[in-house]
Amino acid sequence: MAQPTSPASPRGEGTLPRGGAAASSGPNPPGHAAAIAATARSTRLTGRAAVLAVVICAIALSLAYPVREYIAQRQQIDQLLAQRQEMTAQVNALQQEANRLGQTGYIEQQAESQLHMCFPNEQCYEVIDGHPPSRTPAARPQEDPWYAKLWQSVQRADQESPR
Image (cartoon, rainbow, N blue to C red; front, top):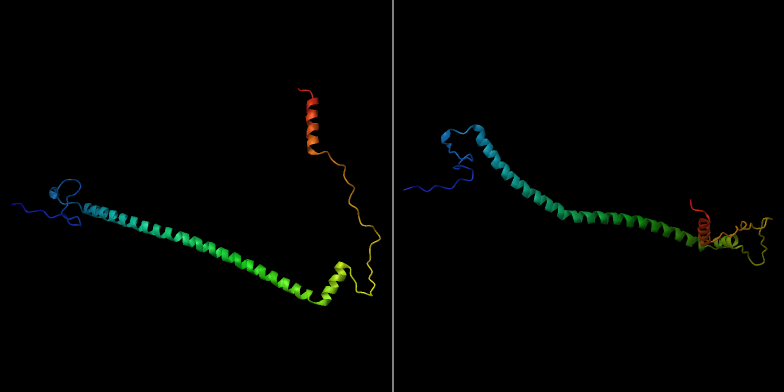
């Protein structure tokens, strides 16, 4: 009765070489076994590397959108902070102007200098140059409108003789 053969072990023991010949032709050269082992290891490593690459790509893709949004939000925060500083400076300037306008002396000074006003029972003088205000330069003669120029060019083209 024949004994059942056991399946090949996971380490490649009990399997025949790919050349098709059994080990009866003699012992395998020492480099041959190492080459078979290296081939087996490289295929296992390639599978693991592919899985690792897929996992890394999945992690990178899942993090890409949140990182992009984070960067965009940081830029927006920086812009808003700059805008806030500008607004604060503008508010301070307006508060100073409001404080000045609350002082009677400042208002009187502005009324005299800009509006040429004076107090009742006070004589104010305004010094004017002896020269009359300058007039606008002499008006240029009115040019023909564009459509008149166009029509004149068409008429000149009709008058010229063809060559």
